[in-house]
Image: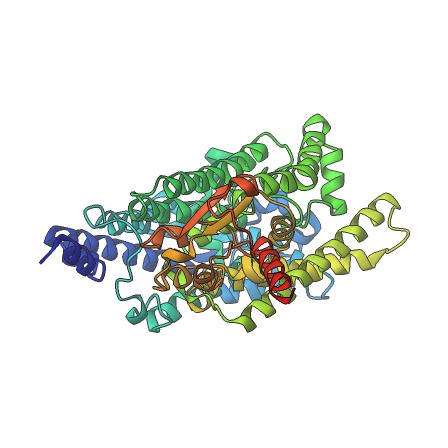
Length: 531
């Protein structure tokens, strides 16, 4: 058998079959991961609860004294059921229904944290290591088993995989993610026990007890790091993807998680410094503007930086480097999609109808975000004299439908069903702006050499943005679609080097014959024949 045949056959062989030792490592990693995930899930149900009015340490900072006084009838009682405890709290503090649902959820969370008794409250570090620690270690070991296999994307029977092709494991994974996001966004009080595990880490970094957003940020960052190990191993033959993965991890850990946490530690306004409007849809809300302007020089710096980032740097960098500088190198949503979502990238719909729906939806969200922001700014500068309470209602609607349900529940939970860039394709308003700039005027383009295309379809299969790349490659057309995030995977999987990512002037590109020049030449030829 020739070397070429051996490599071809290995491309369709599961990684664990190459070496017995690696198979054992993958098995150990899988077991540790499953044990960690099972423990993490079980923490929701552990412990009992008792309200002690003398030791409401955390709740006293978050819950008004007049609300705490209403807890006297249930103080000292022990509840084995979390549901019973939550019902008892609600009956005590909201018998007249005067507390808004969101605020009621906040009160419940902090009261439940102080009321928690049992193993997690006594040993949060131990349970953190048995859950998040084991799952992370297992994930790294599982991926390290690829270190002696051939690098690059290989089909590896993905269309027969229960996990990667909408099988039962994929469905269960997606369902788990959806339920996690629903509880996190709208019923965080059910995560009381789990959040308590993160108190020591939160106290160390922020000097504050953990809440659901610290839990979310930590897990988000750890997931990108662990799945980033997989990306490093998978793309170790490609410097572009190695640097890109390192950039994703750096910006998520440093800019999205660590720096905002340190801002909170020093009692400063907290903001993800890379999160540009309108993805950061709350940036121009009245409460945020008031907070920044009342926080001295640092708050003013954050306001100026966020404005410059959104209005100047986003369009400038998109002109220079295309949409990819943000969507594939910086953005946290894109970072999770490129790491955790990478096994599902082939599930993106490449049909024309999906493209039509995509354009309608993403630009509709952008229009919604622009209208909401205009209302926010006008209301803030006019003291609420123009739009009044309507601005708050629009903000709440956008936050629920777009910020939570679409970006969170659907955007991540639907990875195993619709591919890893559902939010980026159909909902992200910043991606819509970047796409418009990239389409109209940008130095970035994916050039093609149609004469070398063998129509294998690898490029289209692995395009996470639902672009039928092969259609362009067969015709030798440059790819300048609004939705293209320039991840470069299409070029990495092409066996003939047909595709190239370029950031140069049009007359210096690999494919210098542009579509309009071809059409112009054809028209001139027709005129000559007619004459």
